[in-house]
Length: 270
Image 1 (cartoon, rainbow, N blue to C red):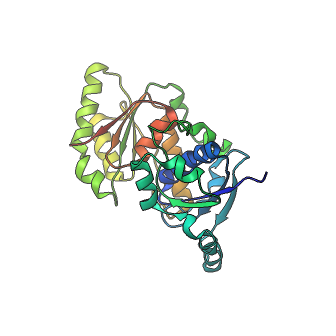
Image 2: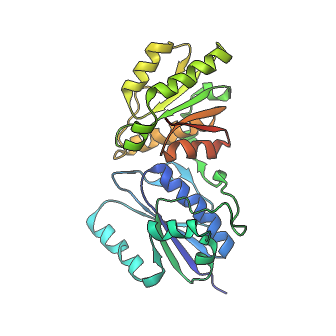
């Protein structure tokens, strides 16, 4: 019997997309559907996934660049699904109702366009998300600095730029409090700083010195640039190899890194 299809079009930044892909993989598996990934290169994540990582062979994929005709053609696909095309508000409701599996399972072919982690912890049908299904490319792994083989760094992720909620709720002084506490416990502590604000790196380097601060220098920060997404992915993997993470409020990057590494995450929030 031919499997029904489940299309997933992840939206938003890199980690929103990773969350949507991993969770939809296990939702599709639980409902016996064939998963098809629609990956659009857009200004919030302008890099094809297959330049960064591999996915299980069971997932088929279509990569769409920013050309007008490519997008116009792919936009016809959701229209074919009619009432089986769902977006963030629908999935948010399913999650709140603990009905993700039921909604996906009882329908035939289905199309989801979302930035959400499609997962409900109270649902027995869907397995917990396992980020190991996303396998980084070898050239990406080669660019992870050797220091991360030590596994004793403390990750610091400070989200800035356009994330107003992170800026308001996770000010720099909260991270400094945590870093000072770590140094009180171990005067040899080393912190890996991942941030989209160069000034934050400079402030922390000046305060703690190079013996306590490690950060990747001269990286591209623009999400609209292919190298910017690649550098963000490497930073994500570096964070995942720390012993713990102090992260930012309302940031999927902090949570995704902790999920990949299966390490503790503490959100710095006032």
